[in-house]
Length: 257
Ligand code: CO8
Image (cartoon, rainbow, N blue to C red; front, side, top):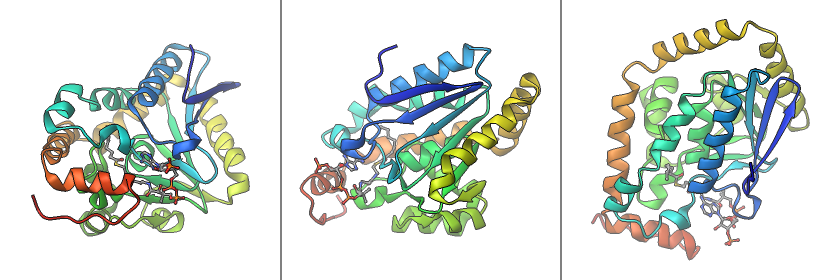
């Protein structure tokens, strides 16, 4: 398969997917997400792939959804395009999925990492949901998964202030599994992936499913709610102003309409 935005390699039983759109800090446009879904679905079908890894660059895992692509959208555009249909397919990947995160994981980038089963972070990783600065809210699970992982007050702080947390803070809060020096990130991620690849594939699959069931009970309805709120915000002036201001590299002037 031709891939414009991903580098995909096989490392023994590990499928290694690198987000590769460096000019815009791996901003997740719809085509990138579509390629990611297709790649995961191929790996899901391939018995030789036991574990998959999603990673980015050293300075940026992903700086979120593509703001340029969304900026002019209306609520109805978002509702009809339903970008979350693809995001939901990522959740259905049946094998262990590891996020290997260095640098910024912001907005949809943070949400993509949270949608994985395990997260290995470098000491330089910064996880955050800066959508509030654009006049919107997280739309790909951030409000729901952060609250489940961190509890209400810490999730509230991240979503309302938009300030990122460090890898160490994320680790202390139970949001990431391991924090490693940046130069060891790839090796440590491979070590974890290979240790899983040795395990019984069906037990892994069902173990994943069972934990997901516990952690995600009620998540479908909650995600649906978050998505509808996200779409709604594209009917506000503040969303237009927030995303325009990002493109124009200036501070937004929000007016509450
Ligand atoms: N979308 C599009 N372009 C981006 C994005 C993005 N998310 N992030 C960075 N870029 C572009 C910049 O516009 C810039 O392009 P150019 O060189 O043409 O001006 C280039 O990448 C480099 O960026 P900066 O100059 O800003 O780099 P800095 O090193 O100064 O700053 C930051 C790095 C702090 C990461 C900064 O780029 C930033 O704040 N980025 C935006 C982060 C953000 O707000 N993310 C949230 C986006 S909204 C979202 O993710 C909602 C998810 C819901 C699911 C969506 C389904 C559709």
